[in-house]
Structures are given as structure tokens and as C-alpha cells.
Length: 468
Image 1 (cartoon, rainbow, N blue to C red):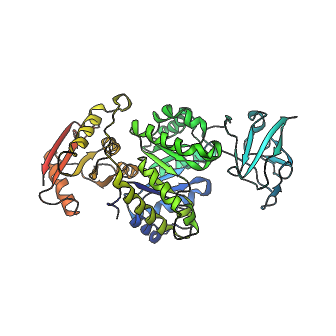
Image 2 (cartoon, helix red, strand yellow):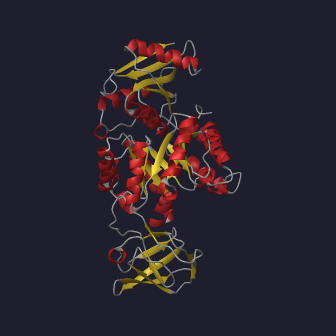
Image 3 (cartoon, rainbow, N blue to C red):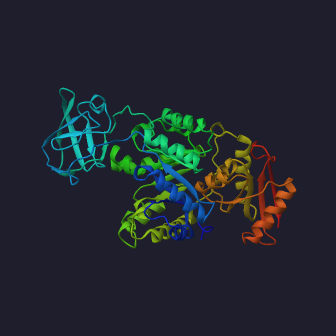
């Protein structure tokens, strides 16, 4: 099960449904990483999820989303909101501590009115209602409603192609980052990344705690797309968050943008995740639509490392079936993935390791290699190997727990915690014995090793082939 698909699956988990038995079923169906959405979780609830995930397996990675620089309407007294009709006039005022109602709306951002120019479109609730800004008058925005729709409190507010000068981290985000460090989770998925400055703010906070947590940049607006090269220099991985991206950018542009982001991540040897509505109908139905199956497969054809489920596993009626379905699609789509030996040495931090990884994957085309085996402190060599998409499985023998979980995000890597050996010979001998005991390799198989010096982080410096 876990060893017969290469694409990794991320599942969003709610503290309302996170018991060990449920998580075990998801893991056995193909889940590799658990996502916790801080926008819908308390720290106490998030900790319960972490405790239960760790009880299932120490190989499951855990990521927590920050809210990031997002804007929402303030609450309303009427939880059902109000109906806005095309042609109605509404106003938006500054006042994050005030209650929204008809016809005056307030947002969570204190300087919203000054940041939004006349002529902009303000999209409420993922674009369900479009407000066109016709003018500013006495520190308020005058808005003409463009379509019928219900406006409720606390719903999302997007202003396409307009820079909103929010700080990268909210106070709640900072509390969740501190909790994530203390809980020893693996990834911070930072929302609405606009440029490297947002990432540096998160990294500075992590560095102040001496943390190993890795940052995943969620690309959700035009600024993130425009600054992707800089972002890739300061992030561990990228998530194409198609929900807000599809609000900020015309929907017909999303497929090409997705493809381009994956290509740029591959060239930089950075893992990439495709997220949002991948099997959305399985929230309510036991089977996906044909379009959804094609969507998941296309992400894999484009060489994504991971695919993500949101409401399907957080609150849906068929969570285990959704994971199993995604795994089946992955197994089938992966049959068509070809080796790619593209390498730009200017874009990698360890060129020797990258060149060796490329040559090893190339050798698997001419030699009957059954497995690639490497030992690692940081996982870097494994990520290089993964990005070349070999046809044989990659086994990572990790000296750190967190490295093992970080590699849960990388395509076609299967991880084990491994004790530090006395020598290279002992490493080879112990690795072969362990993988034979696991049934991963057999007597007579040709296996390939890539590695370096023990007890340091120099990266890979040698290749070796051996018959078992």
C-alpha cells in the first residue's frame, strides 16, 4: 500500500475527527502527511491531532497552515447575513472592531479603505459576490454590487491585483508557530506569500527558536506568482493553493499557472504540492467525478510531488475512500512518468551531490537496478534523486526523525530511521539486511548506493553498485 505509489498524499485533519483508528485507516490507504489548518483550530485541538498522529506512525509528516496576510469581513449580528442584489449600493469602512451589516461592511484590516483604489473589484466569500469600487468619500469605499448573492460575516475578502499592506504574520500565527516548534512538527505552510520578505519574517521567527521546521510557501495571488523565483530561494517547498488563487486570477488561467509553477519548482529541485478541490465531490459522494480523476492525474503527469485533500478528509462523508481513490489514481498516472535528467547547477546548493544523483538515475536506464539507497542527515540528496524521477524506488535511511518526516513530502522516497553506522561498509551491510527483512529487495538484486562522509553534512560524494 504505502510502497506502491510514488506521489505523496496530504490530508487535512480536524480535531473533531482525529482518533487513532481513523488516522490509521487513512495512513494505510496512502496518507503521508497530515495538515492542520490553524484558521479552524485551537492550539489544544491541534496538539490532540499531533499526539494521535504520532501514535499511528513516526513517519507521518505534519504541517500547520498559518492564516498569513488575509482579509475577512467582521462578524455580523445575523449569522445568515443578508441578500445583496445586482445594482445595490454598499459601503466599506475601516473598523476591524465593528460589526458588519447592510449597507455598511467592515473588514479585519484597519487600513483597508486607504489600500484599495477606485476601480478595483472587492470579492466576497471566494468571489461569490463582486463589489465594484466606484469612489472614495470620507474614508469609505462606495461599492456597486455586480451580482446577486448572500453576504455573511467573517467571509473572505479578496482584491485582485491590489497590494494589501498587511504584516506577514498575525498574532495568532506567531502563537501557532511557537506551538509548532514546541510540538516538534515538520512544516509551516505560510499562506498568501507575496515575496521573500514574508518568508524571511517567518524564518527569523523560526531561527529565534532554533527550529528545524521547514517553510512551505502557499502561492495564492499574482504577487506570489510574479516573485516565485525569489520565493524559491527562501522556501523548502511550494503549495499551489488553487482556492484563493482562482479568486485572485481568472479561473481559465489556473491550469497553465499550475503547470508553470510545477516546472519552475522542478528546475530548482523544490517539492511542490497541488491543493484545493481535487476530489471535492467526495465530501458528499462515495465516488469522484471523471473531471476530478483527470485533474488529479494531470497534476501527476505534470510531476507534482504531492496532492492534497481538504474538506474531503477534514469533514467529508467518505474520507478513507477519498484517500484510497487518490492513491489508485496516482498509481495509474505514475506509469507514464518518465525520467527527467535536467539539471541547472546554478540553482542547487550541493552541486556534487546533484551531479552524482543525476548520473545514478541515468545509470538505472542501462542497469537492472532494483533500488536506490542513501543515508542522510538533511534529505537533500534524496530530493535531488526524487526530482529526476527514477523508475526504481528510493530508500532513505535517515539519522534524524525530522528528516524522515520531511522526506514524506518528496516523490518516490520511502523513509526509515537508521542508526549511525561505524563505517561505509557497515552502512551497506546493515541497509541490505534491513531492506531484505522488509521484503523490498531479494537475493541477486542489483542495488545502488549514493552517500558521503558520516557525521557531517557535506552531501553525497560517492556512488556504488552491489549485487545482494
